[in-house]
Amino acid sequence: MKMIRTQGIDIPHLGFGTFRMPGGDAQPVVESAIALGFRHIDTAAMYENETAVGAALAASGMAREELFVTTKVWHDQLSPDALHRAFDISRGKLGLDYVDLYMIHWPNRDMDMAATLEALMELRQRGLTRAIGVCNFNLPMIRRAVEQIGAPIASHQVEYHPFLSQAPMLAYLRSKAIPLTAYAPLAQGRAANDATLAAVGSKHGATAAQVAIAWLLDQQGVIAIPKAGRPESQKANLDALGISLDDEDRAAIAALPKDQRFVRPPFAPEWDAVV
Image (cartoon, rainbow, N blue to C red):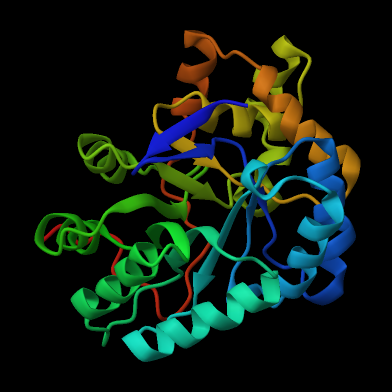
């Protein structure tokens, strides 16, 4: 598994997402993913499965340092005191002495960004999280976090798949050596049924979904965290690591529409903001 180095840590560039796997349902699924070879597990307080994920980590028998665990704080817990309480709850549910990456799940329009990021940085300084990050920031927000506040952002997690361009964000993050973590990398299942991706896959003996993952991993500084409930789908996602796209493949995927955003909660920031 290729690692991406950032802020003194190594992140496996293919991870396992656990969104919409609530409660105990997540435990056997995560156990299967780890047994097959996933070492980067992504969860969040909002997913309501941290206890199950923690049980799966414990049951795996893997040494703690061999696993990379991400969790996130919800957008209504971003005051420093609330964030620290939320972190303690998440860490307790996971049953871990530390997490590898702790992230702001969504920005809050009313948050004091500097105070929130300082609270994250304090957790890092105390060794309770090895790194900090953010999710779903727009360009002005990530610029402020990095350039004005000076937060050591280890990754920025956003929706990214073959039907949505993240070119401006990627360009900025690359300029700061910050990896982009792609959530919803299969466009919430839509990639699996796309004719262009299927045609590319036919060249490689692969599925359309595997091509979507390979396309993300083919890009500099991009991490992907697909979710999959069935062991055969988990293995298929891992097998995407072996696909090598050529320029013809990249051109075909580049020609797909790139304006399809599928994650649009009412509290999302203004995505097109540039200043």
